[in-house]
Length: 249
Image (cartoon, rainbow, N blue to C red; front, side, top):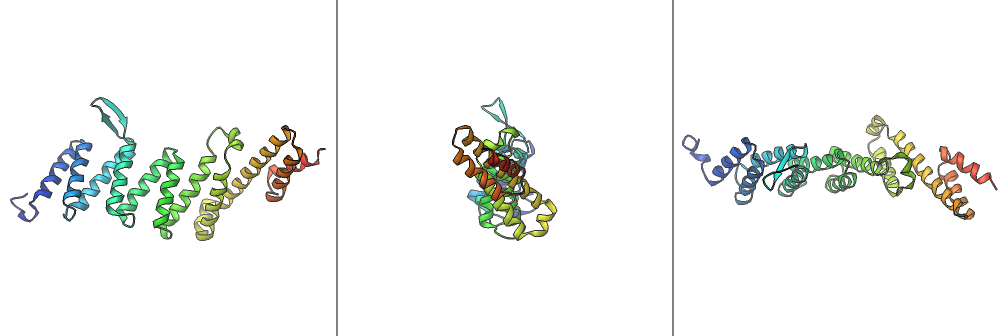
């Protein structure tokens, strides 16, 4: 290749070929090391885009569950390595580029698929700071809403009223904003139904607080929460129960 195409010959090409050989052999750690060397030492090379594409492919494999070897014999899933590579791609390319945003979205989706909802939320939030509008901004806003709701919806279901309700309030706010900005998309995914479900959950949460105060013998505090449920979520099932509790002497 170097003989037939002397214009591509150079130290950057040598590093790239070395990385490609490791990549083809499935030795991803050494491949990434050499791609990084190319990107660091020859940032103006015409091969940088190809190197970033290769790193993205390797990171995608790790985020998909590919294992890596530690200490020469321990095999573990390479999720952390995939995240690290994707983050480095975003740092190099910038969050305002297609490659940079692809890498960041891949990290957010990976966290979400593995039910790491707090980490996923933070990544979607980071993306939303750079992409406030457009398809990426829309997906980031929906991702933030989805993750906040998922934090509260963790099993077991009967324990949910005891969880921190602030994530429910955040989810409601994000879904409400999504509905305002993207009404068509909101209708397609049933945001109104989701908001109704969140309201029911908020009502149940406050009803459970009222019940706690009632068990503790503080009827005045209990009634304040029962009143709140009736006034703030009048259509909820919890509101009907709160009315019955208020009627009892």
